[in-house]
Length: 566
Image (cartoon, rainbow, N blue to C red; front, top):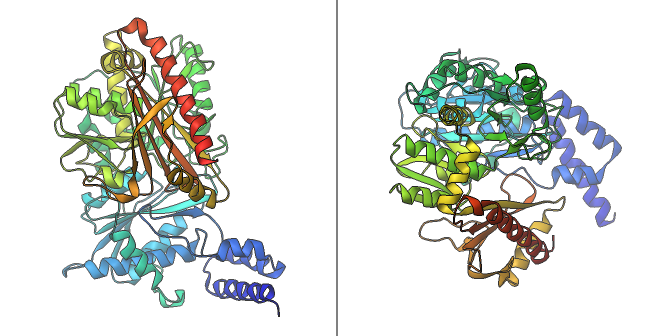
């Protein structure tokens, strides 16, 4: 027998072993057809390894096999997590695990399987009563005094994906070494028939947790502040609409105007190519809803707010007559600066923080307000750990505006704060766009952009990073590289990570810039985060300064494509 045939037979044997213990009739049928058809390429894709548990938990495409998200993989993950929690238990009452889930395909099944494994291991489990936003689960961990929280969600990934996010008793997402320790426990789980999974024994919570979360969201608002603002809201086919609607009603805002086609959960995300507000076309229905409302009521809505499918992110669009749609989507860095300015105006104290891939504008805003400022690696698992954090944001539409309530990004509470800011500006005849103009004049145009390259072959990302390390650029976009850092080395303030950071010197009409290149932690992408700073002498110079910044950013992209070979 040739080596190729021997390998194929071994592959089929692994697939049959998996098939024998798969608890899900759907994935059993799917895998049985592949085995019967003897599809080695497809089977290799599913059995080439195991879906790795890391600081993002688990995330992957739904389907049969260890390289997919399915009930067998989830049961093993839950068994590993419960083993880890039992090892940390100090006696007394059995640890509690609170479990939330979104409305994606299989999310409810994965949540029930997790609850069954938790109870079977002798721990207590409590499930949220329905599909709810991730921030509700993050809030529930500390609110209920749980040892851990598990959220079944793939956030804004494509419809074919699902995922598994883990919080520990401090209400924070896991970081090393906890992720590796849990991964080791998962790897040591034996056959699934040895994992007890009773049919009952867990608690299904009522509305108390949601009501407590909603009561907490109002803490970010100033009593008696303006509330007269018209908001169009899209849940992007996710689970955020009802929670956002209740939060806005409780806070005393006018009823939000829903995007009707996207208000109710739809696991197929039928009206968007990609359920992420940042993706081209994702906001089109929201813009159309705003135009219809304007035609019917004779006035334009003040702001459009979008949550991603699990409502931990918040996107904002503002009226713009120059845009074809009549609306302009703000970048996450712009919303981050607006919220920081609003919180400082409200006399917030504490540390303001963002990530190394976000705009440096926040550092200048904090410095002017004489507030502490710091930077972390990408992700709220790092941002929310900042000592004395009052406000943290990252450019990918994530904002932590109430660290005492939710120690993670929270798209619902951030939406309330955006609405309060817009209402206050409206009362004085101003707008969000006008406030952004003021910030650009005061601190200079901090223009940001991103070059994101999605690949089918993950080795292309590694080869692109190798090329940059082997032949580091001496200039990008016409600006000299003043400092190049390999972030795998770590530093006194940052743990090691796979990334490269370039600080760029100034030139005529340009103060300087920054480029960070890193592989995505959740998607098959190489991401390049770009920033250029252009000084502004006054409002009359804004248009020219923004044009100059856009030209430099375009040159950054062209140079990086050549440098990475992608």
